[in-house]
Length: 414
Ligand code: HGY
Ligand code: MN
Ligand code: MN
Ligand code: MN
Image 1 (tube, rainbow, N blue to C red):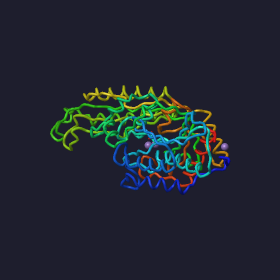
Image 2: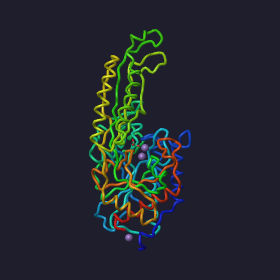
Image 3: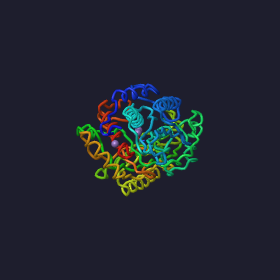
Image 4: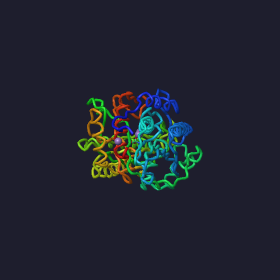
């Protein structure tokens, strides 16, 4: 058996698989709209499953629709070493966010098959359902259920903007599997992902050695004003929930910018007015505040401050204010041993690398609760992501997949 250190991925085969998957659920501007549990997601899953079977992998799906593709090891009693990410995308998503981690895992299996490399531990690839949380909040819901952090029934009950539930849609697309979610043991988990920020490209790095991931709160505000005629209601007699939302968003930026040295982040990307008519002041405004920070104490302080100030803004306008946390996870410190393995792999491959903290959340955040876990980043052009213009180079994909292969082989005893 050749030494795994001499094995390399086939860059063209990886790139072609990314382009093939990108044809499913195309966006309107060159990216993807393959949202979780849509027909496009089902199509992407079917393609991935067919590719896994062609590669000789044994496929299992759990009750959250998480897909696991297993390559036998020489010691079958051992738990598998996993690679993975997600195939679902944002509504105006890119071709690589999540998809790179899943298809690079498949390419690693192809490269090991071609080289006749065996591993003591079984090796597996995972596609996590609904990582984005774009259609069904919270993000990373399925790895959260897998890790025991989110209740299965709560997850099944989550609804999209059209009122469809996660559970119903999972059944409808035919991807509700039989394996009870969370039952399987992982020896280790590696997730290759694009950085979704500008640092690696700016510094000319090929690889990000991810040491940590910042924590998150998603706070869903429901503001209650009074529906009224926008043209005939005197300004002093309005109960304007839209104005309250605008003031809350402005306050959010001020509060977060005071913690710039803690790398705090905050923004609003999802909102809705009811009745959402041009000449009616809104009766109800619903929007979600996304708060992030690597420091748990600062993150929780931000949450308290934003909620307190939002309630004061609403009280001053006579607007009702209710808030519900619809997503949260604490900052994550990844497994130091696996982080070192990634760094050593990058060095052995002669790739320029640097340690980095992940700004975006990933399934690895929850998986780290139940298995030794870490991530590998590759750059993306201009740091652009969650945008159809998201781009990477084939060389970056190749470098990331080669680091994934070497790290995985070391951990799996190839
Ligand atoms: O929200 C996130 O950070 C991830 O893209 N789901
Ligand atoms: Mn992602
Ligand atoms: Mn994403
Ligand atoms: Mn070896």
